[in-house]
Image (cartoon, rainbow, N blue to C red; front, side, top):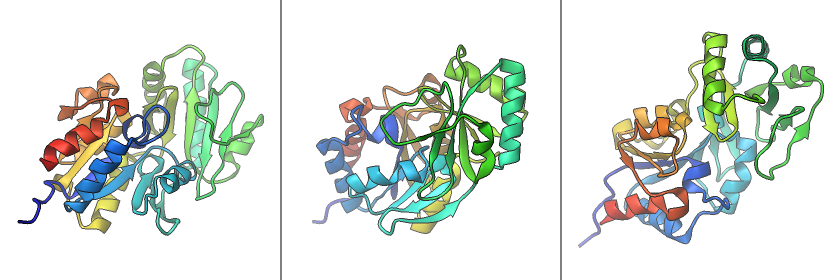
Length: 268
């Protein structure tokens, strides 16, 4: 008798705090569970807020060869071909205006920005606290930020929490940009209407998979639109409270093989 098919056609996994453990590795157990799910008929799709320039090396290390949604849904990348298939950029004049509105209401911000493209630099300004060890380029003159096409702008405040800053930014900008909390210390300004669900739906269409056939895993508020689009959304135990409230299920943490726990159960 042949093995039963996996009940979903697509497994969409966020990267940081979800597929990756705290040490940025993927456990053998989770690798094996994903392999078993794909052998049983599902496709695996990475959906991350990272721009493609800060995702490529991770996918290469994982020997990942499929499609990946990067840049908060703005980029669809073919990892096997090292090719950017689609890319949505942030209007630089609008972004500069939005930053000005936020600073008038909340006070000075520290800025960083991700430039568009496969090799897009990450620019980091004075006072911005970077996480991780990936390369970046410092700037002191803000005009440098607006000089070339961008995928997103990052903002930090010296006093406000991530959630408070995001709330203040949404109120101050009035829809000029979308504002998401994408990680600890990571508040992003994006093109209006752009979410992870945008890129996920494009990639799923390429794979011939419908929303109802998609199982999604995530840990931060920027994963909520992906959960709303997918047939089932699973939050990690380490997830932000906002995502926990909209998840269909909560699994173990990223350090405790939460993805594998769910996939193994579904695989029987």
